[in-house]
Structures are given as C-alpha cells and as structure tokens.
Length: 166
Image (cartoon, rainbow, N blue to C red):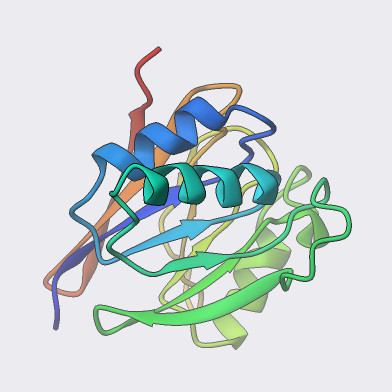
C-alpha cells in the first residue's frame, strides 16, 4: 500500500488568513480536501499564493457547503489518493449535526476507506464500524483554527489536527 499525507480544511467562513497560512506552510502533501463553507476564501487564498509565486503543489478536491450559495461545485465526491478511496462532503445533507450514521452508511456503500466531512465546526474522528470507513472532521478554520492532517501509513489512516497560528 502507498503511503502519503492529505490535508483537510473546512468552514473557513471568511478567515482567509488561516486558509492562506495552510496553503503557504503545508507544502508537503499529496492532496488537500476542502469541505466547503468558504469556496470564495479558497479561490482568494489560491490566487494570493499564486501571485506570491507559491501556488499549491498538490491537487485540491473541493465541495460546496450550505453557505456556498451559487457555487457550481458538487456537494460530495470520491477521490483515490495513495491507494485508498476517500469520500468527501460538507455533511449538511447527511445531517451530521445530529449524528454520523447516515454519512457512514453512504460512504460505506460507495466503497470509501475514509469519509471526510465538516459542517459541525467540531474536530471529530470515529474509527470504522463494520462495513463503514473511518470518519474524520477537521473542525473549523474560523472557529477553532483547526485543520486536519491524515497520514496514510501501511494502508492505515492516522488522523490528527493542527492549529493555524494566530
């Protein structure tokens, strides 16, 4: 199994500084998953990094959240990264503020090994249940200053959180 590192950010809600910091300082990664509620901020952060001569060196997978009104991005996606299949969504359409069972079941049906979600603004990780993937929420760049770092080691996920410096 391949090894690697993915970054996960969600719920920026205007805190451009935090997202820009992630893009400028977390340069060693295989992918960034942006889970919505701040697509405008993501576009602006990418543009600012590119103008400064430091465009992101990894693919960015993105979905729209409930506050990304008018954006054409999908509400969910599947991406193969480092030999693992990752399901990603904002989470509002799966009722994640009331629990993650529906999300886990949907991601399991899709064959995902890892399901990434936001919307609750709370960093969360749930070990896989039978037939379901690991569930991971990076928290909110705006509220908690947190983002996720997922290491893929020997095919397993090691999920953790980091904070954007003030």
